[in-house]
Image 1 (cartoon, each protein chain N blue to C red):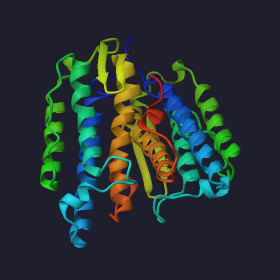
Image 2: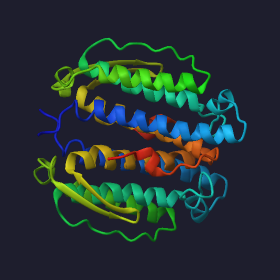
Image 3: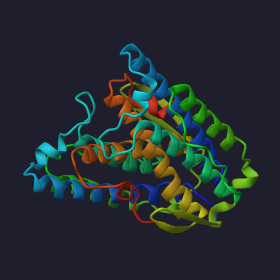
Image 4: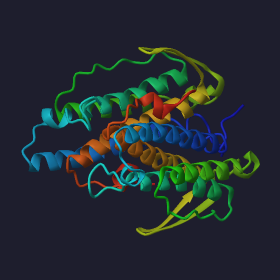
Length: 168
Length: 168
């Protein structure tokens, strides 16, 4: 078995988003024990000029869904950013996982040199598939999952790094 | 060109640690402008029962150095955790980068099924190389680099996600 673009993307994304659901569930337990509403919890930020929890979740999902589609060379499905409650946030993550799981190894493998073209607010970016996965998607996905974790942790949730890493 | 265990580890680790140095340099600028000592900055935490900045840096370095060695099947070099100043912290990261760069593709490639045995305080863990890299090393490395970023960001450092992701 040789490492492939599929193995380094889809299962990694699915696992990270599953663990994100898990830390969010623990955050929900803590918030409910303190009578904190879903709306308030999802708007918590580490510092006022950073994005709130819900946005960290949405971007993590987008990295996984858009990234997988682009590696496969298909137009990414767009998900609306309109979640204000925890059931909606869980559903957003679940739909992202389902979408990512819909791609096959045949679609992703061999995408090492596939040209990837991103239009960002900050400008346009050009990648080949492997650099896009290893230098953009994975760091971004874990950045937003970790920041969501840190927001929940700082808000008092009883979570540890094992909740973030998940089961091997 | 097919994705390999080397490409998914050594260059990813080197880049993450280089970006960690970069955000730490920006944190230093901010701290110096506020007359915050190195010792105080390196002991900042997001919340009292999380690890301080210096520990986030040390663990990120250890993930890269120990992880690379274990993938290569050699005994990891141990680095002493004794940094109290920023020059020492930069040097720790630089030594980790140098150590990781000392491994060749020939040593790492083909490690997908290499048995990896970890003794942790929480117990023993068994992996094969690919699961160790994708499900343990990479999530842990980015967890600690992101938490270091979040500590510096919350402390007032003028950094954005691009500083964390770095140049493609």
